[in-house]
Amino acid sequence: MYTATRSPLIRLHANDNVLVVREPIALGQLLPEFDLRMRAQVPAGHKIAARRIAQGEPVKKYDTVIGAASRDIEAGEHVHGHNLELVDFYRDPGFGLDVRPVDYLPEDQRARFMGIVRPDGRVATRNFIGILSSVNCSSTVIKQIAAHFTPERLAAYPNVDGVVAFAQTSGCGMSSPSEHFDVLRRTIAGYARHPNLAAALIVGLGCERNQVADLVGSQGLAPGERLRTFVMQDTGGTRATIEAGIRAIEAMLPAANDVKREPVSAAHLKIGLECGGSDGFSGITANPALGATMDILVRHDGTAILSETPEIHGVEFMLTRRAVSPEVGQKLLDRLAWWESYTRGHNGQFNGVVGPGNQAGGLANIFEKSLGSAMKGGTTPLQAVYEYAEPIDQAGFVFMDSPGYDPVATTGQIASGANLICFTTGRGSMFGSKPAPTLKLASNTPMFKRLEEDMDINCGVVVDGELSIEQMGQRIFEHILCAASGEPTKSEQLGLGDHEFVPWHMGIVS
Image (cartoon, rainbow, N blue to C red; front, side):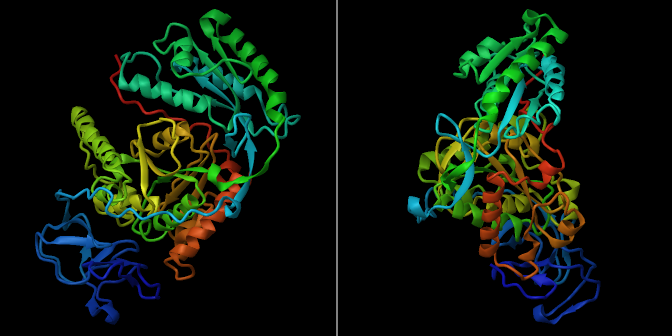
Protein backbone atom coordinates (compact mmCIF):
# COMPACT_ATOMS: atom_id res chain seq x y z
CA MET A 1 0.00 0.00 0.00
CA TYR A 2 1.16 3.48 -0.78
CA THR A 3 2.21 5.96 1.87
CA ALA A 4 0.14 9.12 2.08
CA THR A 5 2.23 12.22 1.35
CA ARG A 6 1.31 15.50 -0.22
CA SER A 7 3.07 14.67 -3.46
CA PRO A 8 0.74 15.14 -6.44
CA LEU A 9 1.61 11.57 -7.50
CA ILE A 10 0.92 8.23 -5.83
CA ARG A 11 3.05 5.10 -6.28
CA LEU A 12 0.80 2.16 -5.49
CA HIS A 13 3.41 -0.61 -5.74
CA ALA A 14 7.16 -0.73 -6.17
CA ASN A 15 6.77 -2.83 -9.35
CA ASP A 16 4.36 -0.39 -11.06
CA ASN A 17 5.49 1.53 -14.14
CA VAL A 18 2.67 4.07 -13.79
CA LEU A 19 1.87 6.60 -11.09
CA VAL A 20 -1.60 7.86 -10.15
CA VAL A 21 -2.22 11.60 -10.20
CA ARG A 22 -3.53 12.77 -6.82
CA GLU A 23 -4.38 16.31 -7.97
CA PRO A 24 -4.30 17.97 -11.42
CA ILE A 25 -0.79 18.56 -12.73
CA ALA A 26 0.38 20.88 -15.48
CA LEU A 27 2.39 20.40 -18.65
CA GLY A 28 6.07 20.92 -17.89
CA GLN A 29 5.64 20.62 -14.11
CA LEU A 30 8.73 19.25 -12.35
CA LEU A 31 8.25 16.39 -9.90
CA PRO A 32 11.70 15.97 -8.36
CA GLU A 33 10.65 13.27 -5.89
CA PHE A 34 10.07 11.01 -8.92
CA ASP A 35 12.70 12.64 -11.19
CA LEU A 36 9.98 13.50 -13.71
CA ARG A 37 8.92 16.38 -15.90
CA MET A 38 5.30 16.29 -17.01
CA ARG A 39 4.74 15.84 -20.74
CA ALA A 40 1.00 16.60 -20.54
CA GLN A 41 -1.66 18.26 -18.46
CA VAL A 42 -3.25 15.40 -16.54
CA PRO A 43 -6.45 15.39 -14.40
CA ALA A 44 -6.70 13.86 -10.94
CA GLY A 45 -7.24 10.09 -10.86
CA HIS A 46 -5.42 9.48 -14.15
CA LYS A 47 -2.03 7.83 -14.69
CA ILE A 48 1.37 8.91 -15.95
CA ALA A 49 4.38 6.82 -16.95
CA ALA A 50 6.89 6.49 -14.11
CA ARG A 51 9.58 5.61 -16.67
CA ARG A 52 9.85 4.93 -20.37
CA ILE A 53 7.51 2.08 -21.38
CA ALA A 54 8.33 0.41 -24.69
CA GLN A 55 5.64 -0.53 -27.20
CA GLY A 56 4.15 -3.92 -26.27
CA GLU A 57 5.47 -3.79 -22.71
CA PRO A 58 2.93 -4.66 -19.99
CA VAL A 59 1.62 -1.70 -18.04
CA LYS A 60 1.31 -2.42 -14.33
CA LYS A 61 -0.86 -0.82 -11.64
CA TYR A 62 -0.95 -2.34 -8.15
CA ASP A 63 1.56 -4.86 -9.57
CA THR A 64 -1.20 -6.14 -11.88
CA VAL A 65 -1.19 -5.97 -15.69
CA ILE A 66 -3.90 -3.59 -16.95
CA GLY A 67 -2.83 -3.67 -20.61
CA ALA A 68 0.15 -3.10 -22.89
CA ALA A 69 1.66 0.04 -24.36
CA SER A 70 0.29 0.48 -27.88
CA ARG A 71 3.33 2.67 -28.68
CA ASP A 72 6.44 3.89 -26.91
CA ILE A 73 5.44 5.96 -23.87
CA GLU A 74 7.94 8.40 -22.39
CA ALA A 75 8.41 9.07 -18.68
CA GLY A 76 5.96 11.75 -17.49
CA GLU A 77 3.51 11.08 -20.33
CA HIS A 78 -0.23 10.61 -19.76
CA VAL A 79 -1.17 6.89 -19.88
CA HIS A 80 -4.76 6.26 -20.95
CA GLY A 81 -6.87 4.70 -23.69
CA HIS A 82 -4.94 6.51 -26.44
CA ASN A 83 -1.70 4.62 -25.72
CA LEU A 84 -2.85 1.61 -23.67
CA GLU A 85 -4.34 -1.43 -25.38
CA LEU A 86 -6.29 -4.24 -23.82
CA VAL A 87 -4.52 -7.57 -24.26
CA ASP A 88 -5.83 -10.85 -22.91
CA PHE A 89 -3.44 -13.35 -21.45
CA TYR A 90 -3.44 -16.56 -19.47
CA ARG A 91 -4.03 -16.09 -15.77
CA ASP A 92 -3.26 -19.05 -13.52
CA PRO A 93 -6.34 -19.54 -11.29
CA GLY A 94 -4.14 -20.96 -8.54
CA PHE A 95 -7.11 -22.42 -6.68
CA GLY A 96 -6.74 -21.89 -2.94
CA LEU A 97 -3.14 -20.67 -2.98
CA ASP A 98 -3.94 -17.44 -1.12
CA VAL A 99 -6.45 -18.85 1.37
CA ARG A 100 -5.71 -17.58 4.86
CA PRO A 101 -7.64 -18.79 7.91
CA VAL A 102 -10.07 -16.26 9.34
CA ASP A 103 -9.49 -15.16 12.92
CA TYR A 104 -13.15 -15.35 13.95
CA LEU A 105 -14.21 -13.40 17.02
CA PRO A 106 -15.85 -15.33 19.85
CA GLU A 107 -19.62 -14.88 19.85
CA ASP A 108 -19.59 -12.75 23.02
CA GLN A 109 -17.11 -10.33 21.43
CA ARG A 110 -18.99 -9.73 18.20
CA ALA A 111 -20.38 -6.29 17.39
CA ARG A 112 -24.12 -5.81 17.76
CA PHE A 113 -26.77 -3.72 16.08
CA MET A 114 -30.44 -3.06 16.73
CA GLY A 115 -32.24 -5.45 14.42
CA ILE A 116 -35.75 -6.83 13.99
CA VAL A 117 -35.90 -10.55 14.70
CA ARG A 118 -38.51 -12.40 12.62
CA PRO A 119 -40.37 -15.46 13.95
CA ASP A 120 -38.09 -17.77 11.93
CA GLY A 121 -34.96 -16.22 13.48
CA ARG A 122 -33.89 -14.18 10.47
CA VAL A 123 -32.98 -10.56 11.17
CA ALA A 124 -34.25 -7.48 9.36
CA THR A 125 -32.68 -4.04 9.09
CA ARG A 126 -35.91 -2.43 7.81
CA ASN A 127 -39.63 -3.19 8.11
CA PHE A 128 -41.60 -2.74 4.88
CA ILE A 129 -44.69 -4.29 3.36
CA GLY A 130 -43.94 -5.17 -0.26
CA ILE A 131 -46.21 -5.55 -3.29
CA LEU A 132 -44.86 -7.53 -6.24
CA SER A 133 -46.16 -8.01 -9.78
CA SER A 134 -45.85 -11.37 -11.50
CA VAL A 135 -46.01 -9.58 -14.86
CA ASN A 136 -45.78 -6.06 -16.24
CA CYS A 137 -49.54 -6.10 -16.84
CA SER A 138 -50.18 -5.79 -13.08
CA SER A 139 -47.50 -3.16 -12.42
CA THR A 140 -49.88 -0.18 -12.53
CA VAL A 141 -52.20 -1.91 -10.08
CA ILE A 142 -49.48 -2.53 -7.49
CA LYS A 143 -48.25 1.04 -7.84
CA GLN A 144 -51.78 2.32 -7.21
CA ILE A 145 -52.13 0.13 -4.13
CA ALA A 146 -48.82 1.38 -2.71
CA ALA A 147 -49.67 5.01 -3.52
CA HIS A 148 -52.74 4.75 -1.28
CA PHE A 149 -50.54 4.32 1.79
CA THR A 150 -49.37 7.87 2.26
CA PRO A 151 -47.35 8.95 5.32
CA GLU A 152 -50.61 10.26 6.78
CA ARG A 153 -52.33 6.88 6.42
CA LEU A 154 -49.29 5.10 7.89
CA ALA A 155 -48.96 7.47 10.85
CA ALA A 156 -50.76 4.97 13.09
CA TYR A 157 -48.08 2.38 12.28
CA PRO A 158 -44.78 4.04 13.26
CA ASN A 159 -42.79 0.79 13.13
CA VAL A 160 -43.62 0.23 9.44
CA ASP A 161 -41.09 1.88 7.14
CA GLY A 162 -43.50 2.01 4.24
CA VAL A 163 -45.56 0.13 1.66
CA VAL A 164 -43.51 -0.25 -1.52
CA ALA A 165 -44.40 -1.55 -4.98
CA PHE A 166 -41.81 -3.65 -6.80
CA ALA A 167 -43.04 -3.33 -10.37
CA GLN A 168 -41.24 -5.08 -13.23
CA THR A 169 -41.42 -5.23 -17.01
CA SER A 170 -41.35 -8.95 -17.77
CA GLY A 171 -43.34 -12.07 -16.84
CA CYS A 172 -44.84 -12.83 -20.25
CA GLY A 173 -43.76 -12.87 -23.88
CA MET A 174 -40.79 -14.95 -22.78
CA SER A 175 -39.73 -18.53 -23.24
CA SER A 176 -40.95 -20.89 -20.59
CA PRO A 177 -39.11 -22.86 -19.40
CA SER A 178 -35.95 -20.77 -19.80
CA GLU A 179 -33.09 -19.37 -17.77
CA HIS A 180 -34.72 -15.93 -17.90
CA PHE A 181 -37.95 -17.40 -16.54
CA ASP A 182 -36.15 -19.12 -13.66
CA VAL A 183 -34.21 -15.95 -12.80
CA LEU A 184 -37.38 -13.85 -12.70
CA ARG A 185 -39.15 -16.30 -10.40
CA ARG A 186 -36.14 -16.53 -8.08
CA THR A 187 -35.97 -12.75 -7.91
CA ILE A 188 -39.66 -12.23 -7.09
CA ALA A 189 -39.58 -15.03 -4.52
CA GLY A 190 -36.40 -13.65 -2.95
CA TYR A 191 -38.13 -10.33 -2.34
CA ALA A 192 -41.35 -11.95 -1.12
CA ARG A 193 -39.49 -13.91 1.56
CA HIS A 194 -36.94 -11.17 2.38
CA PRO A 195 -36.64 -10.51 6.13
CA ASN A 196 -36.95 -6.74 5.52
CA LEU A 197 -40.56 -7.36 4.40
CA ALA A 198 -42.97 -7.92 7.25
CA ALA A 199 -45.51 -9.10 4.68
CA ALA A 200 -45.94 -9.27 0.90
CA LEU A 201 -48.69 -9.20 -1.70
CA ILE A 202 -48.19 -10.69 -5.20
CA VAL A 203 -50.52 -9.50 -7.96
CA GLY A 204 -50.85 -11.09 -11.40
CA LEU A 205 -53.02 -10.55 -14.46
CA GLY A 206 -54.17 -14.13 -15.07
CA CYS A 207 -53.14 -15.13 -18.59
CA GLU A 208 -49.37 -14.51 -18.29
CA ARG A 209 -46.72 -17.20 -18.60
CA ASN A 210 -45.56 -16.43 -15.06
CA GLN A 211 -48.71 -17.72 -13.39
CA VAL A 212 -49.03 -16.58 -9.77
CA ALA A 213 -50.00 -20.01 -8.41
CA ASP A 214 -47.13 -21.71 -10.23
CA LEU A 215 -44.71 -18.97 -9.13
CA VAL A 216 -45.68 -19.43 -5.49
CA GLY A 217 -45.62 -23.22 -5.66
CA SER A 218 -42.35 -23.54 -7.58
CA GLN A 219 -40.49 -21.26 -5.16
CA GLY A 220 -41.72 -22.86 -1.95
CA LEU A 221 -43.69 -19.79 -0.86
CA ALA A 222 -46.54 -20.36 1.56
CA PRO A 223 -49.63 -18.12 1.21
CA GLY A 224 -50.98 -16.99 4.54
CA GLU A 225 -51.19 -13.93 6.76
CA ARG A 226 -47.72 -12.82 5.65
CA LEU A 227 -48.21 -13.55 1.95
CA ARG A 228 -51.37 -12.82 -0.08
CA THR A 229 -51.97 -13.17 -3.82
CA PHE A 230 -54.46 -11.70 -6.28
CA VAL A 231 -55.16 -12.38 -9.95
CA MET A 232 -56.79 -9.41 -11.69
CA GLN A 233 -58.89 -11.48 -14.11
CA ASP A 234 -60.35 -13.39 -11.15
CA THR A 235 -60.71 -10.44 -8.79
CA GLY A 236 -62.75 -8.25 -11.13
CA GLY A 237 -60.25 -6.13 -13.02
CA THR A 238 -58.16 -3.08 -12.30
CA ARG A 239 -60.33 -1.09 -9.88
CA ALA A 240 -61.54 -4.12 -7.97
CA THR A 241 -57.99 -5.48 -7.56
CA ILE A 242 -56.71 -2.13 -6.31
CA GLU A 243 -59.51 -2.01 -3.73
CA ALA A 244 -58.89 -5.62 -2.70
CA GLY A 245 -55.16 -4.96 -2.46
CA ILE A 246 -55.69 -1.94 -0.23
CA ARG A 247 -57.91 -3.97 2.10
CA ALA A 248 -55.30 -6.77 2.19
CA ILE A 249 -52.50 -4.37 3.13
CA GLU A 250 -54.69 -2.71 5.76
CA ALA A 251 -55.17 -6.14 7.32
CA MET A 252 -51.39 -6.75 7.32
CA LEU A 253 -50.43 -3.44 8.94
CA PRO A 254 -51.20 -4.17 12.63
CA ALA A 255 -49.00 -7.29 12.72
CA ALA A 256 -46.30 -5.56 10.69
CA ASN A 257 -46.26 -2.73 13.21
CA ASP A 258 -45.99 -5.12 16.15
CA VAL A 259 -42.19 -5.33 16.11
CA LYS A 260 -39.35 -3.86 18.09
CA ARG A 261 -35.64 -3.55 17.53
CA GLU A 262 -33.32 -5.48 19.82
CA PRO A 263 -29.55 -6.04 20.06
CA VAL A 264 -28.39 -8.77 17.69
CA SER A 265 -25.03 -10.03 16.48
CA ALA A 266 -23.36 -8.54 13.39
CA ALA A 267 -23.29 -12.14 12.16
CA HIS A 268 -26.83 -11.46 10.88
CA LEU A 269 -25.59 -8.83 8.42
CA LYS A 270 -25.53 -9.76 4.73
CA ILE A 271 -23.93 -6.91 2.81
CA GLY A 272 -24.25 -6.51 -0.96
CA LEU A 273 -21.14 -4.85 -2.46
CA GLU A 274 -21.58 -2.52 -5.43
CA CYS A 275 -19.59 0.11 -7.27
CA GLY A 276 -20.80 2.52 -9.92
CA GLY A 277 -19.43 5.61 -11.56
CA SER A 278 -15.92 4.43 -10.65
CA ASP A 279 -12.86 6.62 -11.07
CA GLY A 280 -9.09 6.35 -10.68
CA PHE A 281 -9.39 6.73 -6.91
CA SER A 282 -12.01 4.01 -6.42
CA GLY A 283 -9.35 1.28 -6.35
CA ILE A 284 -7.18 3.34 -3.98
CA THR A 285 -9.67 4.53 -1.37
CA ALA A 286 -13.32 3.41 -1.32
CA ASN A 287 -13.00 -0.13 -2.72
CA PRO A 288 -10.03 -1.33 -0.63
CA ALA A 289 -11.49 0.41 2.44
CA LEU A 290 -14.78 -1.42 1.90
CA GLY A 291 -12.72 -4.60 1.48
CA ALA A 292 -11.14 -3.93 4.88
CA THR A 293 -14.66 -3.49 6.28
CA MET A 294 -15.71 -6.83 4.85
CA ASP A 295 -12.69 -8.49 6.47
CA ILE A 296 -13.98 -7.10 9.79
CA LEU A 297 -17.52 -8.29 9.02
CA VAL A 298 -16.36 -11.80 8.16
CA ARG A 299 -14.46 -11.97 11.48
CA HIS A 300 -17.86 -11.26 13.10
CA ASP A 301 -19.31 -14.20 11.06
CA GLY A 302 -21.24 -11.90 8.71
CA THR A 303 -21.65 -12.25 4.95
CA ALA A 304 -20.12 -10.14 2.17
CA ILE A 305 -21.63 -10.52 -1.32
CA LEU A 306 -19.49 -9.47 -4.30
CA SER A 307 -21.17 -9.39 -7.72
CA GLU A 308 -20.95 -7.76 -11.17
CA THR A 309 -19.24 -10.61 -13.03
CA PRO A 310 -18.13 -8.56 -16.07
CA GLU A 311 -16.33 -6.26 -13.65
CA ILE A 312 -14.05 -8.91 -12.21
CA HIS A 313 -13.02 -10.08 -15.68
CA GLY A 314 -9.26 -9.97 -15.97
CA VAL A 315 -8.63 -10.17 -12.23
CA GLU A 316 -10.65 -13.31 -11.45
CA PHE A 317 -7.41 -14.98 -10.31
CA MET A 318 -7.49 -12.64 -7.28
CA LEU A 319 -10.65 -14.50 -6.23
CA THR A 320 -9.92 -18.05 -7.40
CA ARG A 321 -6.67 -18.02 -5.44
CA ARG A 322 -8.82 -17.41 -2.34
CA ALA A 323 -11.38 -20.12 -3.13
CA VAL A 324 -11.86 -22.61 -0.29
CA SER A 325 -11.91 -25.47 -2.80
CA PRO A 326 -11.13 -26.06 -6.48
CA GLU A 327 -14.87 -26.61 -6.99
CA VAL A 328 -15.71 -23.12 -5.73
CA GLY A 329 -12.96 -21.57 -7.85
CA GLN A 330 -14.06 -23.49 -10.93
CA LYS A 331 -17.67 -22.40 -10.44
CA LEU A 332 -16.52 -18.79 -10.69
CA LEU A 333 -14.60 -19.56 -13.88
CA ASP A 334 -17.68 -21.35 -15.23
CA ARG A 335 -19.76 -18.19 -14.72
CA LEU A 336 -17.14 -16.16 -16.61
CA ALA A 337 -17.23 -18.72 -19.43
CA TRP A 338 -21.03 -18.46 -19.47
CA TRP A 339 -20.67 -14.70 -19.89
CA GLU A 340 -18.32 -15.19 -22.82
CA SER A 341 -20.98 -17.29 -24.55
CA TYR A 342 -23.87 -15.04 -23.48
CA THR A 343 -22.34 -11.85 -24.84
CA ARG A 344 -21.20 -13.53 -28.04
CA GLY A 345 -24.74 -14.78 -28.61
CA HIS A 346 -26.08 -11.24 -28.27
CA ASN A 347 -23.54 -9.61 -30.58
CA GLY A 348 -21.78 -8.10 -27.60
CA GLN A 349 -18.37 -8.39 -26.03
CA PHE A 350 -17.36 -9.39 -22.56
CA ASN A 351 -14.41 -6.99 -22.53
CA GLY A 352 -16.71 -4.02 -22.82
CA VAL A 353 -15.33 -0.50 -23.09
CA VAL A 354 -15.69 1.33 -19.79
CA GLY A 355 -18.25 4.12 -19.66
CA PRO A 356 -17.56 7.80 -20.37
CA GLY A 357 -17.62 8.61 -16.64
CA ASN A 358 -15.07 5.89 -15.91
CA GLN A 359 -12.81 7.17 -18.67
CA ALA A 360 -13.10 10.79 -17.53
CA GLY A 361 -12.26 9.64 -14.01
CA GLY A 362 -9.04 7.95 -15.10
CA LEU A 363 -9.97 4.31 -15.86
CA ALA A 364 -8.63 3.24 -19.24
CA ASN A 365 -10.22 -0.21 -19.68
CA ILE A 366 -12.19 -3.01 -18.04
CA PHE A 367 -9.10 -4.65 -16.52
CA GLU A 368 -8.25 -1.48 -14.63
CA LYS A 369 -11.85 -1.13 -13.48
CA SER A 370 -11.98 -4.80 -12.47
CA LEU A 371 -8.85 -4.38 -10.40
CA GLY A 372 -10.62 -1.87 -8.20
CA SER A 373 -13.96 -3.67 -8.21
CA ALA A 374 -12.51 -6.92 -6.86
CA MET A 375 -10.99 -5.09 -3.89
CA LYS A 376 -14.42 -4.60 -2.32
CA GLY A 377 -14.36 -8.27 -1.33
CA GLY A 378 -11.41 -7.90 1.03
CA THR A 379 -8.93 -10.71 1.65
CA THR A 380 -10.84 -13.56 3.34
CA PRO A 381 -11.51 -16.94 1.66
CA LEU A 382 -14.10 -17.19 -1.11
CA GLN A 383 -16.63 -19.54 0.48
CA ALA A 384 -19.18 -20.03 -2.31
CA VAL A 385 -20.37 -18.87 -5.73
CA TYR A 386 -24.09 -18.37 -6.43
CA GLU A 387 -26.14 -17.72 -9.51
CA TYR A 388 -28.26 -14.59 -9.76
CA ALA A 389 -30.88 -14.27 -6.98
CA GLU A 390 -30.07 -17.69 -5.48
CA PRO A 391 -30.61 -17.75 -1.71
CA ILE A 392 -27.28 -17.24 0.02
CA ASP A 393 -26.91 -19.76 2.85
CA GLN A 394 -23.13 -19.61 3.38
CA ALA A 395 -21.60 -17.01 5.72
CA GLY A 396 -18.34 -15.24 4.89
CA PHE A 397 -17.16 -13.81 1.60
CA VAL A 398 -19.23 -15.09 -1.36
CA PHE A 399 -19.84 -14.20 -4.98
CA MET A 400 -23.22 -13.84 -6.75
CA ASP A 401 -23.24 -13.75 -10.55
CA SER A 402 -24.80 -10.62 -12.05
CA PRO A 403 -24.40 -8.01 -14.78
CA GLY A 404 -22.43 -4.86 -14.02
CA TYR A 405 -25.55 -2.66 -14.26
CA ASP A 406 -26.03 -1.50 -10.67
CA PRO A 407 -29.84 -1.73 -10.30
CA VAL A 408 -29.85 -5.24 -11.77
CA ALA A 409 -26.92 -6.40 -9.65
CA THR A 410 -28.36 -4.92 -6.46
CA THR A 411 -31.79 -6.42 -7.16
CA GLY A 412 -30.15 -9.84 -7.39
CA GLN A 413 -28.20 -9.32 -4.17
CA ILE A 414 -31.33 -8.28 -2.26
CA ALA A 415 -33.25 -11.24 -3.71
CA SER A 416 -30.38 -13.46 -2.49
CA GLY A 417 -30.80 -12.09 1.04
CA ALA A 418 -28.68 -8.93 1.35
CA ASN A 419 -30.16 -6.76 4.11
CA LEU A 420 -27.92 -3.77 3.41
CA ILE A 421 -26.00 -2.50 0.36
CA CYS A 422 -22.63 -0.70 0.38
CA PHE A 423 -22.11 1.20 -2.86
CA THR A 424 -18.81 2.88 -3.76
CA THR A 425 -18.61 5.65 -6.35
CA GLY A 426 -16.01 8.02 -7.72
CA ARG A 427 -18.13 10.06 -10.10
CA GLY A 428 -21.18 10.31 -7.88
CA SER A 429 -23.81 7.66 -8.66
CA MET A 430 -27.25 8.54 -7.27
CA PHE A 431 -28.73 5.29 -6.05
CA GLY A 432 -30.92 3.89 -3.33
CA SER A 433 -32.71 0.60 -2.80
CA LYS A 434 -35.62 -0.97 -0.96
CA PRO A 435 -36.24 -2.95 1.12
CA ALA A 436 -32.50 -3.10 1.92
CA PRO A 437 -31.01 0.39 2.33
CA THR A 438 -27.91 1.61 0.47
CA LEU A 439 -24.89 3.35 2.00
CA LYS A 440 -22.94 5.47 -0.53
CA LEU A 441 -19.15 5.62 -0.22
CA ALA A 442 -17.37 8.46 -2.06
CA SER A 443 -13.86 7.75 -3.38
CA ASN A 444 -12.63 11.35 -3.34
CA THR A 445 -13.19 14.43 -1.24
CA PRO A 446 -14.07 16.96 -4.00
CA MET A 447 -16.96 14.80 -5.20
CA PHE A 448 -18.11 14.10 -1.64
CA LYS A 449 -18.27 17.83 -0.88
CA ARG A 450 -20.07 18.56 -4.16
CA LEU A 451 -22.65 15.79 -3.65
CA GLU A 452 -22.80 15.54 0.13
CA GLU A 453 -26.59 15.23 0.14
CA ASP A 454 -26.22 11.89 -1.68
CA MET A 455 -23.02 10.54 -0.11
CA ASP A 456 -22.90 8.86 3.31
CA ILE A 457 -19.18 8.34 3.81
CA ASN A 458 -16.10 10.17 2.47
CA CYS A 459 -13.37 7.63 1.72
CA GLY A 460 -11.35 10.39 0.04
CA VAL A 461 -9.74 11.08 3.42
CA VAL A 462 -7.48 8.09 2.69
CA VAL A 463 -5.81 9.75 -0.27
CA ASP A 464 -5.91 13.05 1.66
CA GLY A 465 -3.65 11.39 4.24
CA GLU A 466 -6.09 11.60 7.17
CA LEU A 467 -6.87 7.89 7.63
CA SER A 468 -5.31 4.58 6.67
CA ILE A 469 -7.25 1.94 4.75
CA GLU A 470 -7.67 -0.02 7.97
CA GLN A 471 -8.97 2.99 9.89
CA MET A 472 -11.36 3.83 7.08
CA GLY A 473 -12.58 0.22 7.08
CA GLN A 474 -13.41 0.46 10.78
CA ARG A 475 -15.25 3.75 10.24
CA ILE A 476 -17.36 2.18 7.45
CA PHE A 477 -18.16 -0.77 9.72
CA GLU A 478 -19.49 1.61 12.37
CA HIS A 479 -21.63 3.34 9.74
CA ILE A 480 -23.02 -0.06 8.72
CA LEU A 481 -24.03 -0.87 12.30
CA CYS A 482 -25.83 2.48 12.60
CA ALA A 483 -27.66 2.07 9.27
CA ALA A 484 -28.60 -1.53 10.10
CA SER A 485 -30.01 -0.25 13.40
CA GLY A 486 -32.45 2.01 11.56
CA GLU A 487 -30.52 5.25 11.04
CA PRO A 488 -31.70 6.59 7.66
CA THR A 489 -29.14 6.65 4.87
CA LYS A 490 -28.79 9.63 2.56
CA SER A 491 -30.65 7.82 -0.23
CA GLU A 492 -33.51 7.01 2.15
CA GLN A 493 -33.72 10.65 3.19
CA LEU A 494 -34.03 11.56 -0.50
CA GLY A 495 -36.74 8.97 -1.13
CA LEU A 496 -34.75 6.75 -3.51
CA GLY A 497 -35.46 3.06 -3.93
CA ASP A 498 -38.98 2.88 -5.39
CA HIS A 499 -37.78 2.46 -8.99
CA GLU A 500 -34.57 0.47 -8.50
CA PHE A 501 -36.15 -2.99 -8.56
CA VAL A 502 -34.77 -4.22 -11.90
CA PRO A 503 -34.69 -8.02 -12.38
CA TRP A 504 -32.20 -9.28 -14.94
CA HIS A 505 -33.71 -9.59 -18.43
CA MET A 506 -31.70 -12.37 -20.00
CA GLY A 507 -33.74 -13.85 -22.75
CA ILE A 508 -35.56 -13.30 -26.00
CA VAL A 509 -38.96 -11.59 -26.00
CA SER A 510 -41.30 -13.31 -28.43
